[in-house]
Image (cartoon, rainbow, N blue to C red; front, side):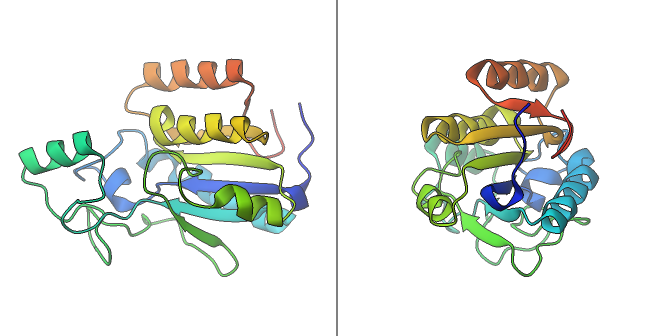
Length: 195
């Protein structure tokens, strides 16, 4: 197990927004809400240790013009408008779910696609801070967590994934994706400093 060096590490909280977390939300991930307490604890532990905390969010134009085509088509077919729109509130919003609070000193990063590295400048920002390790939390494991994991490995970062802080729609999906990320070189951990 690689030793976490706090000043060279960032904890990413990916897509923990009401539109992905709240039951009944248009893009709800079944296991996301249950991870909120674990993510809150991990964020507190990271801040206390001096680890950079980065909130990675999706925000879509109100007309969905910047949304992936399959997602846009699915939402429009269901008549769901305004999902994850700027300044949105309520069940389909960009607001953090109850129990998660962005704090002063945390970074906010808006991503246009699944990976936190895709067209965000994250790599440059991390390198400027001397960060060489990323710890991944959030939703959804097979899409945004996994895409970010593989891109981080491609950019030569050390990657840890906090399994209790990630979610999928089923346990089978969660297990398969954790196993695949481990085979690709990510460390699957139960906590920041625990294997």
